[in-house]
Length: 288
Image 1: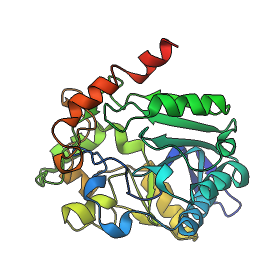
Image 2 (image 1 turned 90 degrees about the horizontal axis):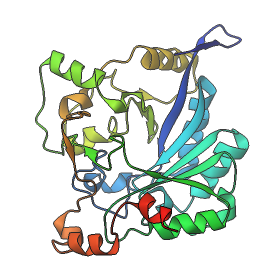
Image 3 (image 1 turned 90 degrees about the vertical axis):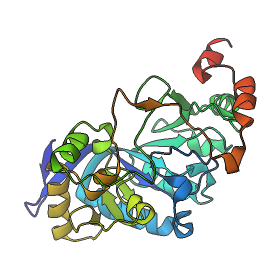
């Protein structure tokens, strides 16, 4: 990790990107969701955009990054998303990646996304609601950059991180190994005013019912103490309590993506989705 010194001689951390959660509301109910969104409490569905921007402004004052990655849930469900887009790309002049599940057509003018700093990343999910091809065509028509996402595995499958019922792992060596080998340990995430090593690091405490340690995440504060703590947190990565309740990312343990809870889509919808979505999104695009 690179280092940078400000006028007060306090080291400033530097990362390639960070994740910003705008809320855990989602248009899908994936039973194996790595972020546990279908099980998130009602008060975490949609975060206040002024609060998000205020917290992000503080973080960006103490952390040098090149790109902000906006996630949910599903970010296009947040009615105030345009405010965050303008803040990141115009006020802060950072690159912005919007991670969408490909089931929602943005309700705002696509011209807002026509910016060389912005990319819309569309997940390729075999679900009934998938309008990814239509969305990509509309974005292309508007001159907006977009790309297909085949997940961390690069094979169109998810890592099996385990669900809400992952039993606590008390063996520190096992947990440390999970963390060291986890692809998501670099995904510094801002979730409701807190920073953690990954997008599961904050929300999982409320969903899985454990008690976090003071060192598990940082509460955003515009102070030099926060800057020092942030530098140390980013540089000296160590597993957090959330890792005890997560299986991490294991190349030998992958699963089919976006399987829906039966109460949400029903047993027959998988066949229907496959009929409507015959193959990978990028394969369809190559046939144009």
